[in-house]
Length: 386
Image: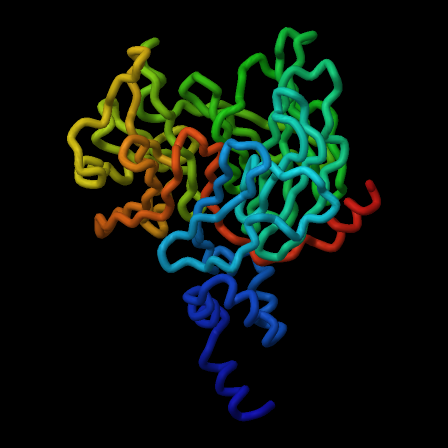
């Protein structure tokens, strides 16, 4: 062994090397892991991968007009070398519709809206420009509504899942849940059935899919099923803050995100001047982490207003938040239709996007790039199904 190599091995332990690498941008680390087999091993080790950087680079958004492309509004000092338009996806004549995002992977539909039937669903990675079609995603004529939830967490598994919530009038509008396993490119049978409507905001954290009820103030927690038994364990969790208000009180509900593998929730207080951010401790205990004053952010004292129909609403929306980067992404719906980032630690406000009319914004999702490749077995299984 070379003397220099021997000294490096003695002085720099694995923990110290990972600590150094964790300070690099994720894209740079993914390039540098080709330097040696030991660096490559760090990227596949679950223990060390938890220390590697995973920071959002921007907000993926798409306008409501038919045929519009998917765009990325970059956050300050972020890497914008991402093909968010998905031009690498081949053999499609119609534009893709952004539906869901999970730790760097995107779920897009090709065809009608979910209530009119979904066809040609794909999962893709804009950072690596890989993509694959999901088989059998076009519902039959009896389906009333279908919603797909993409679930991927590289710190938990290299494979992704897609949960399908499908309702039909014949069953009294009961919702059936099936799961797509990317490892085998197959769909399960119906694993669970409910009469509740869980089509709200969702997030996949540590092998658990959390889905908001459409109008009730609680979450459904679904454990990722085992590929052998295909059992779907589930429970409900009461959300913190206040539920939907009186009949004439119309407001945007809160937002889910995670911080260091812990589920978090943000919501305006009743008059909108403050935002609270909670983290889920244990199974059902919510702890307040931040209480943020919005008066200085928007430069006005009144945040609760009425529209022409007499409905009360907040004049701004919480689009996303990231506690590790200490950022909250907000949409000001009355002053120039701005989308801004607010620093929790410094109070600095930066405008990241200005659109002609906020009501035309169809979808906005916080995007964290993932530079890992699809496992070879996933691509092979998808090709075998085609």
